[in-house]
View 1: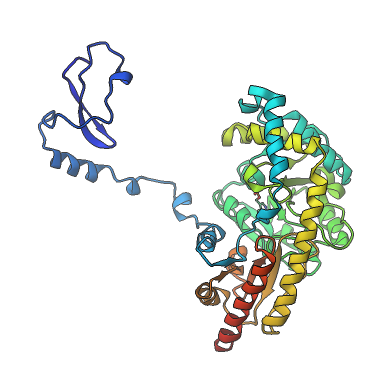
View 2 (view 1 turned 90 degrees about the vertical axis):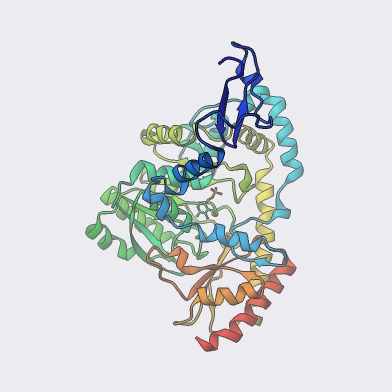
Length: 453
Ligand SMILES: Cc1ncc(COP(=O)(O)O)c(C=O)c1O
């Protein structure tokens, strides 16, 4: 490109004149921030050019995939926007308590990660994840009765990506997934992109009603059974040991994989630990874990624990998703585990969340109308509430937002939009004082408006 030739850069829309010598390095010579000096390059005026651009370049008219256009935004993410407004008390997100993040220890793990791994900690790394971290995760699983080694573990960018990978690996348009009713909204979001359809099975205080599963399998031939068996998001319920055995037995008989999404089982504050479906079922179960609730969600490190024979499939999917999980945060967590800090940390969170659960339940007893029922989870982050039949949690949410307090409406967790009289409360994120104040505010809303419904 020779001296004096002008050219157009459409973003931003300006006309530049190139003054460099012929053959000069264009990147260096390109005065991208220069004042436009030439407007007569083409046979059209600037205003015609702008017209032409805005007529032709209309990103909102591009042919995006209908799956993306029609996908619903996450109600929880939307609620988080409201929750961040000043003065709002949020029981909506599934956020851990920010004051419990072990920042000093994590800071040290940052330093140690760089000291120990140097530039490798910043480099591309294996799609399956760093072998040492996989070994550490397998060892933790083993201590909970789950027979596994590093070959069973693939590191993901959080449990949410594990769900996305399961969806990519299994779901073709129209395939049926069997889920609990209610179920985790993030799983629905992941599966919806692959045009899954859902068959659901109800729950009681002992979790999924497994007696209904076989009939659903016979009738709908689901590709997967998706469950959150322990301290379920959203309901806080846990599948009983007896039902775990039954679930595994039925799924094994029909050779249908159980995807047990398990971010919460280590956050137990009460009762005896319960054997995981993975420990009971072995290869029929694909277990998903995460450090999000145990350590910090911002690290974005989770994992899939599955049969060695299917790991190459997940490895291919992982490569297509993002090549590999964050190398640096894997190194940090390796260090945190190596220094044996995780179990003490988990014990601290358990204590804190137990106090908060109790505080929330006490406040609900005092301020909520007695006809509102709720679960009493033995661990995890959530309480599940049921308004009287006919009441609409969505309508009440508008009044709650006026009072600057939020929750997530239950219908978001029901694939068919049911559960209109239910809602989910998170008790881990708010401080002790705000829990009390938030429940008082909700109590005012419910007392005032429930009568009208
Ligand atoms: C059941 C369940 N699965 C997956 C996730 C996503 O977790 P992560 O932060 O590890 O992606 C959550 C988060 O709330 C969850 O509750």
